[in-house]
Image (tube, rainbow, N blue to C red):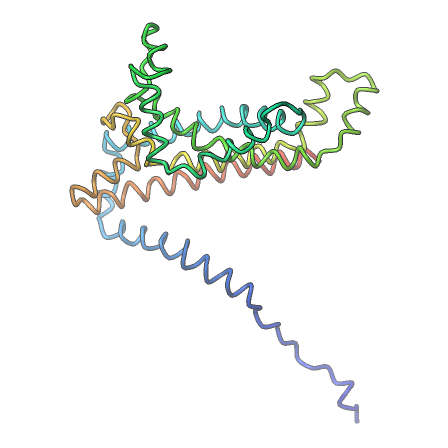
Length: 278
């Protein structure tokens, strides 16, 4: 007879630890349940009614203003944020700490205050808006104002995502490239950019997502006129004010689906950048 201590015991999977339980519970309650509720509310309508609301001319115009403007703002901030992060990491100058702190201002500033500030500064009588009037450029209460609001609130995401990566970068690799005859542009393109590209794309994705969902600053700096500068979040709020809960739900569901697709595409670009960097 085989001693009991040599008999293999049946495998028992480890019990889920407390961190895993907290993680899944929080994600289910905060993300999964609201998303499912949104889809279930939209599903109460017939497919024909959902299609009619989702593809109405005013909704299509709002999608175009929202996602098109947010994508352009994210792309521009991707370049500007990379340059700003580079200057903050690689250069020492007077007022550096102040500028570094100001980068986080859009995080702390209430969005309504940001919209009021932009509308005041860029109005036809404002400090900057008055300088643009002779050139026929109007910012406040136009789509350009929507663009500036999205640009303002999404900038910190790129800077704060790229900055730590630049701080950890090894300067010796750049010096080695210079010693081998590489120019400054070649060094940046082949040595510096590949490691920070995934972080930059992550910052662009975060900034894009933040801009798509922006409401407080845009509703003040824009005229909110359909087919002109009306964004989807404001359109949803207008539908709620009219007690059109079904219409607001359908537009919100469409925004959610489009955002997921675009974020998936950006994540694929990020993964490509990570492979390219290695």
